[in-house]
Structure formats: C-alpha cells, structure tokens
Image (cartoon, rainbow, N blue to C red; front, side, top):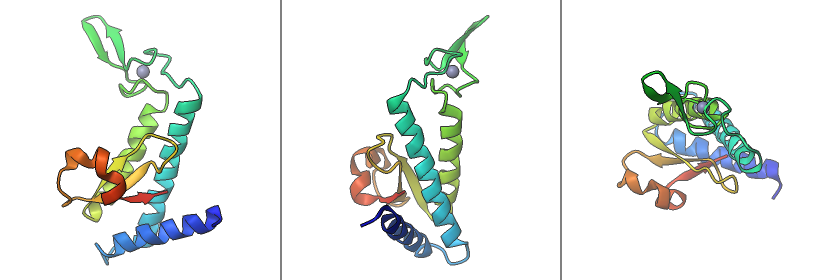
Length: 141
Ligand SMILES: [Zn+2]
C-alpha cells in the first residue's frame, strides 16, 4: 500500500468515526484537520528525537530564575523544548475539535507511531489511555 493510499484510508476511518458522532459539522474538514495536526505533532516528535531542541532560555528545564525564586519559562511554556509552545497549541486545537465529537485525545510522543489517537470520552479509565490507546483509540495521521 502506498503512503497516499494509507493516508486516504486513515482519513476515511477518522471521518467515519466523526460522522457517527455528529451530522451538523464539516466532518471531512475536521477529520483532515485532526490528521494534519497529528502529522505536525509527529514531525515535532521526530525533531525532538534527532536534534537538541532544548529551550535556550531555560536550558531545557522549563523554569527560569526570577527575583523571588523560580517561574515557568515563557519561551517554552514550561515544557523545556523549543517546540513546546507550538506543540501545546496544536494539542489544544486537536482537543477542541475532538471534544465537539465526544472524543478525547491521547498524544503519543514516540515518532515511530501516530502522534494522535482519538478515544471516545465515555471509554472508561482515562488514566489508562497511555496503555490502552492502541486498542481503544483510532489513530489519526
Ligand atoms: Zn524554556
């Protein structure tokens, strides 16, 4: 299967999942957005694996010294990564779209797999998403 065929099948799978949950939104556009967000997050994870992406302002700690002690680094939103702010923004967008369909997001940071899995909000044990995402979630990529 070519990469284009794989992407089309993934897009159809994600769109079908969204369509089952809503009929009054632009399901296809939302499915495309979720897949694009997932691929952007995946590229961030790849870069994080291959390059030193530590925030230069806080040396990757996510905290900076202020006169009264320590504060969250504003440059990286406290993530310690140069891509931290962008990553948070992309994740927030995905969460917003997913919530419209009664879904929650699981973000998987290993670049060998999909970065975003969509899990029904009514699936039990959200605290176990990290171990169950591949069986109860739908990968978006
Ligand atoms: Zn920082």
